[in-house]
Amino acid sequence: MTTTPEKVPTQKSSAPRALGFWMCTALVVGNMIGSGVFMLPASLAPYGWNAVFGWLVTIAGGLALAVVFAGLAREFPKAGGPYAYTQEAFGPLVGFMVAWSYWISLWVGNAAIATGAVSYLSVIFPAIAEVPGMHLLVTLTAVWLMVGINIAGARTAGGVQVVTTVLKLLPLAAVAGLAFWIIGGGSSAHGGAGLTPFRPSDIHAGGITAAATLTLWALLGLESATVPAGKVVDPVRTIPRATLAGTVFTGVIYLLVCSAVVLLMPTDALKVSNAPLSDFVGQYWGAGAGKLLALFAAISAFGALNGWVLLQGEMPFAMARGGVFPAFLGKESRRGAPVRAHLMSAGFLTVLVAMNYAKSMADIFTFIALLATTASLFTYLACALAALKLQAARRITPTLALTVIAVLAGAYAVFTLVGAGSKAVLLGLVLLAAGAPFYWLTRGRAGTGTHTHPTA
Image 1 (cartoon, rainbow, N blue to C red):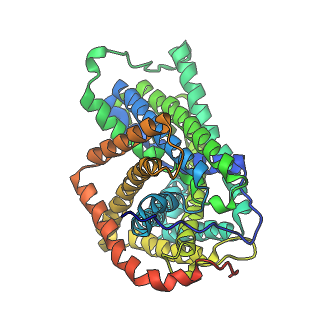
Image 2 (image 1 turned 120 degrees about the horizontal axis):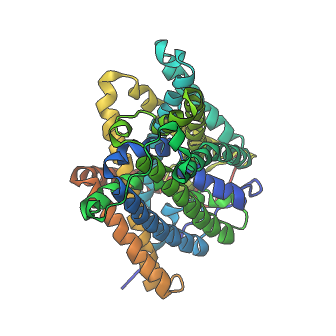
């Protein structure tokens, strides 16, 4: 005899829905384009043209995942995204464990994003790196500034995300334009190296696989629009469109910019570069242009931090409304912001940032960051399997297209987990298992907040 999984309660907000198509798309693009794109060419330098094919594999896998998320969001436009979908398919325990690991990956990842953003600023303001404790102070100030913006409401956070997304695209457009100018012969008068020649003998499966594993990290965040569904205007239409549009747009940007730098800079110089895009621009337009690009890199990272802070508050809020997290986290302010959930997540984030500045704790931070990264991969695999399960159970209308794409998305998730290595997978499983005791401890007491919607 089979039982029907418990449904996630419909999310009602005390404030008007604030996120439209453009804000949701900016959330997807802004969360995917953080500081990684500014550093990734150095990691891809040894792979040459294999990196281009690696990007094509990653973009194809990312699009398959985006279609899965779009299909699930169309059927279940509920706050929590991955949590809502996996709970619908596999019940509250599995849904909680996926949400638990995903939530931890959010605030742990934000510690790294905040640290990286301020590191870019130190190129412009050397005192940040030179004065003891200044880096920590500026980083924590940036974290709580973004928390304050999100507590002010989803519309404010969405507006900041649109502005920072536009600003972060400017240097990437400049890099792409410079690349086209070089390929067109503009580098001849500047002693440019020119485009790396394409030789079929250099292309091999190992190089493509290694490059595809690296490029995966740049696509994390494609599910961003699904998490704050309760604050999205017409979520049935807006979330799928924003998810697909944001993933396609970001994938094309990554392919053009990263491939251009990898193929147009000498490999030996690129693979040891601490700021590959800045060095690329500086080689042709001077050191001043390189520093300006570093400033935009910081803006890019701060924009990503803003978007991820939004999600780190929305996830425990959705879990509390679903009855699997303490009920007091499921309350909103009059602006529709889950203030208590934001404050709790930001508290954990603050501790992690402080840990990153204590040398004795550096190894612990690296350990937790590795868990967080792998947790995202488990989330993607679980959502692909949820799409298959819900179709098989006729909970959503089965289609051949979604079935095939969900299978491909699941295969891609497994492929990337294999590429991440056995240690990362085992650590991810530990993270998932760690949530189970917490689920049993909180479920009974949290359930009382499932059907009420008071303000904080």
